[in-house]
Image 1 (cartoon, rainbow, N blue to C red):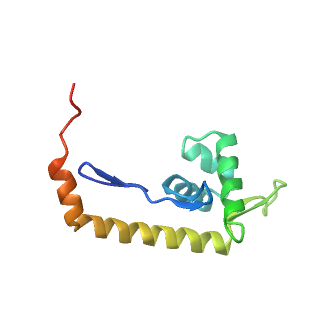
Image 2: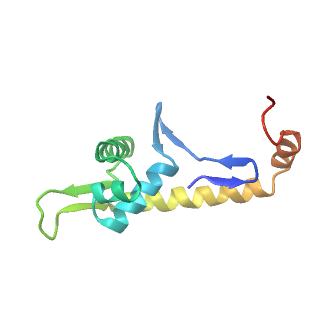
Length: 124
């Protein structure tokens, strides 16, 4: 979830080297996996391709000290995908940090300064 307040849009990204380990889209994907129990169903819910969802999950799993998403093949009751306990903790901490950033920016003099100096639209 990126937060937009007037012309200011905040997008929190956590980097692992040069790779985005967590950002608004990846957090949304984790929430969709938790809701749907499937990486492909989560991708469909977010209008993402199957390949893109798998690449994002793989990237997240490689960036954190423990996997965020566990998968099980098969087709039975235990098949599909789920957030690991670590995945749930990372998601909760990320959403909490987004809230801190949003609250700080909402009351920021720097935000007010930038908004006062910004044009309503680009010059022609």
